[in-house]
Picture 1 (cartoon, rainbow, N blue to C red):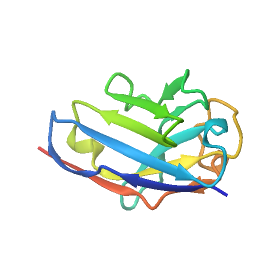
Picture 2 (picture 1 turned 60 degrees about the vertical axis):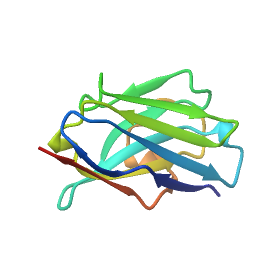
Picture 3 (picture 1 turned 180 degrees about the vertical axis):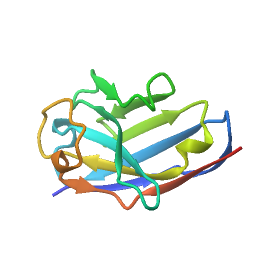
Length: 125
């Protein structure tokens, strides 16, 4: 079992930045692939990006490429997502997810086994 808890969401103006954090616990954090997803009411949850167990590899959806950066600190059991140049269309609930394996990249919902409760990001125009 892995428990994940997101934090760092909030309200920001367009062009601003936020850093989301995801604290994980419950098993060997350094041996699991982590991912970020987001969801807008009435729409399906969509993939944002993922990071390999070592942190050496990242993969992003087109929406985040060049603006979002995922990193991890295995000593702190934490994954981060730095979001820059935010746009109103980035407004969503952002979810952290953990996969019960080290395969990479993982960009589908069904590939992740554990989910956080989500953190709201609102970007005003």
